Image 1: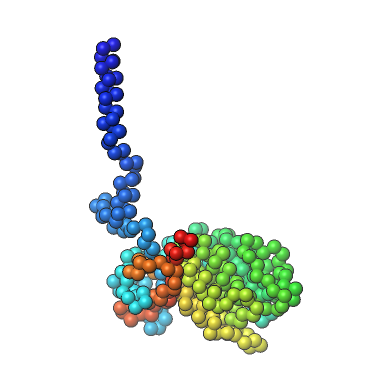
Image 2: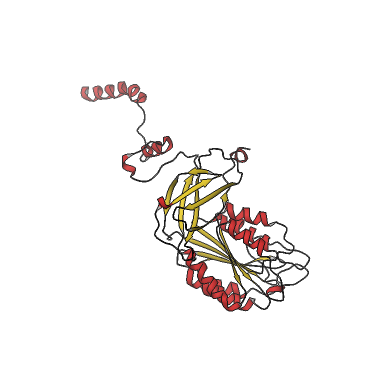
Length: 343
């Protein structure tokens, strides 16, 4: 009994002392504190750590020689990066393409595409069959006097082909789609005949692709004419840039109708993609093959801007090859807007 009382007394006396001792950090807390303080840890290897307020900007790009042939297997030190003319340090670099890929396929179903639409659907289905893997996703949108989601995100080529088959030439002047309920993408409709190209590109980037991670691409089949969109070309480009979406445009020209090369060139080049002119339907398959090859041959870099101000304003970036190769990359990005977030 005396021993038990003594033990209890010692335990009670020790309580104030124990209360003054700092609590042992929970598992993983030490590394978390190091990450926040940006203190190197010999156990962290080559994994970079940053303060939590640092934004890492990712840029996907392809490299081609003077003949337009893709150039693989280049190292990080063969590139230099500028933001608003100021050199930036490339902190991440990868020549791998194993990141998940999300593709938005946008089909122009306005009156001007009447003669080419059947072939477009067949070739586009073959493209998706070729490029998608089990970890990739795709969706299909048609645009005419309205913007309609024909197939939501899926990796099923069967469902995607079925979605493509739903595309119909729509010149209904009451502004309703013959497809019925378009799905979760908001529908931009009008009372007049039109081609809501800019609205479709904006919605695909902002409502779908912007919510995905990994590599993202938008492929638009159109003659390039926008008629009746509520949004502007500038809005579509900005949405694609904010969503980190590479945009490809298959500009399909029909002698009976004109085509707007300039607008489509801006949309593609500003986002790191390109425009491919298809003056004959039988060239469409070759165009899709080129896009597939480029998506499989992308490089990826990441950098943290030397400009610490997050004001949400567009910043121009330029990626250069020290070997004189042609770089196909987006022209800029939008940093977060800390002022807007604090309101």
